[in-house]
Length: 453
Image 1 (cartoon, rainbow, N blue to C red):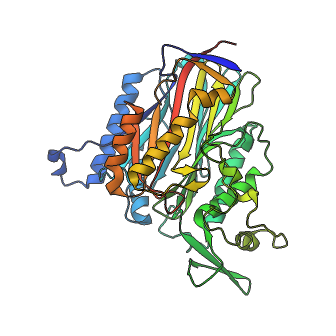
Image 2 (image 1 turned 180 degrees about the vertical axis):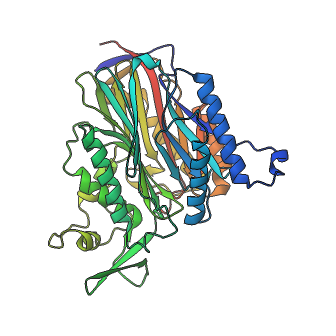
Image 3 (image 1 turned 45 degrees about the vertical axis):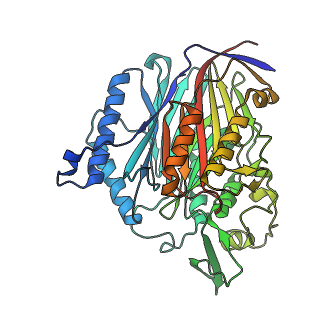
C-alpha cells in the first residue's frame, strides 16, 4: 500500500482552460461572419490567459471543437482559425487538433487548453511537427512526457474517405502508424501511452466492403447485406493491430472513442517515459467490465471482422468474431504519479453496468455515468488498487461531456455542475460509441502530493 497526502496547493502544475466565445449583440451587427468573430474572440481570450499567467505558462496542447455543415465547411473554419492564430505572434506553435463536434449553445467554436504552470527553469520543452503529427515534449530531470495530435485520418480537402478509397480501418491504421513513429523517435512504444482519444466520423455507422474482381467498393451499409462492420469497430481493430506487440505492464491507456461529424479519424495522446521512480496504475471499476475483456455479446453487432482485414492485410489469416484481440483496448482510468504530482485520467465513461448499456432517459443515463465515475475515483476503489490517499481528492482539473442530442445539454450541464463543482466543463454534441447511449463523460485531475511511504 502506497500512502499519499494531497498538498494544500491542490491545483497542481497542469491546468485546463475552457474558452467559449462571448459575442455581444453590437458585434453581431458587424458585416463579418459570426464564426470569424467567435474564433477571434476565443483567440483574444487565449492571449489574455497567456499574458495573465506569464512566465509560468506553457501550452501542452489545444483542442478546437467546431460546428460544421459538412467536410468543406469544417475545413474552411479550420483554415480560418489557423490563419488567425498565425497572425498572433504572441502565441507559439503547439499541438493543435480540430474536432468536428459542435459546442453547446449553438456556438461555432470552443477551445480547450491544457497548460503547464511551472517556472521555465524547472523543465525543458520542445514543440515539433512530423507530417501529420504535432507534439510537445516536456522533460524535467529524468521525467519526460509527450502530448501529441495526429490528423492522418482527417481529410484536408473536399474529398470524402470513400472518394479516396479509404475505409475507417485504413485511416485508423494510418493514425496509429504515425503514433508509432513519434513514439519510436523518442525511444517509447505503445506501452508508454497513458491517455488516448480517438475521434471517429460516423462512429456508429456501418461500411460495406465488397470485393469484386480484386477491386474493393465502398458504400454505406445496406441492411439486405450481411457483410457489415461498424466504424467504431474498424477503429478498434486497427488499434488492436498496433497494440498487440506492446508490453502493457502498466495496463492499457485511459481512452475515449467518440464520434465526429465529418468522415475520417484523428487521435490525441499523452505518453510518458519509463522510470523506476514513476508510478503508473491502471484503474478498474467494480461496476463495469474492463472494455478490453468484453465478451462480444454486447459488442456493437460485430459481424465478420475478417472481411476488413482480408481486404487490406493477410487474406490467409482467419479471425474469430468473439476474439478478445479486437475489443476496445483501454482501461477505465489511469493514475500517473511523477515526483510530487499526480495525474488521474478518467476514460470516456457512459451508462454501462458490467458491459450492458443502461436504458433510460438522459437524466438516468447521466446519473449512471456520474455514479460510475464516482465509484472509479472513490477512496475505497483506489485503496483496492494499493493507493491510500489521506483526505479527499481535490476537484477535477477539467471535465468533458459528449452529448448526443442538443436538447439534452441543459440537463447534462446542470448535473455535471452539481456533481463536479466549479471546474472547467466543456459540453459538445457528439455520437457515442453505442447507438443507445446518450452521453459520455471524461475527466482529468492533476494535483500536488507528498508520498508518505
